[in-house]
Length: 246
Image 1 (tube, rainbow, N blue to C red):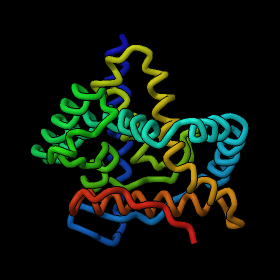
Image 2: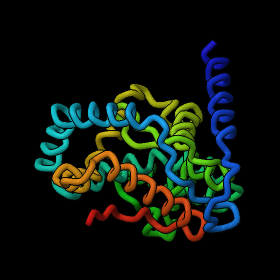
Image 3: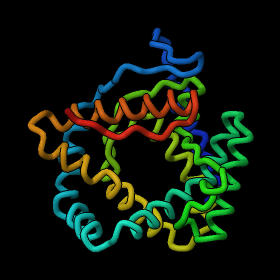
Image 4: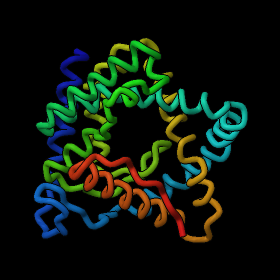
């Protein structure tokens, strides 16, 4: 029954993603990479969820992150970040197959093998021996296939997203060959989320201190970074740009 449920949900997600292909003219960066205008039809709901997210962050998540960053030395933080980044290599390998980038897929699979066998992923030996890390995911795969971003979404706890990227996340949840075979997967997911939050702690503090509209600022930052990822992944797989707030 579980297998049938996964297949049904997976098909629904793929259908939802593809019915949002934009028919409007958009600015083309490359032949198969398009930027979407921000479509935000449920802004009041999104704003309410963002307020809830900041509330939870204030009372639970932020204190945990601040304590972790205060206690953990930089090499430990780097090792933890490498560990969770390494767990995503199989998804990157799968995404590159969907994109027809077979050499990059093999590279991601090789990186996972080397780093897992040598340090459980806590040290990026693969990069030292010339196996460069290439960032991608299923959401970027859909974008490169011409799928529109769809409506902007603020997800509870998770934060900014859109229908295309959320669909990609759901697909990844079901096809991830690593997480689906790990015991206590929920703890791995929580750890991954906390690590991702720790990596942008300074940027979130800047947003908190800003007198501007947090909602509009986060939305703009999310789309600027996501569009940069789409273009960079398509052109030369550059790293995700830092967030800068004037």
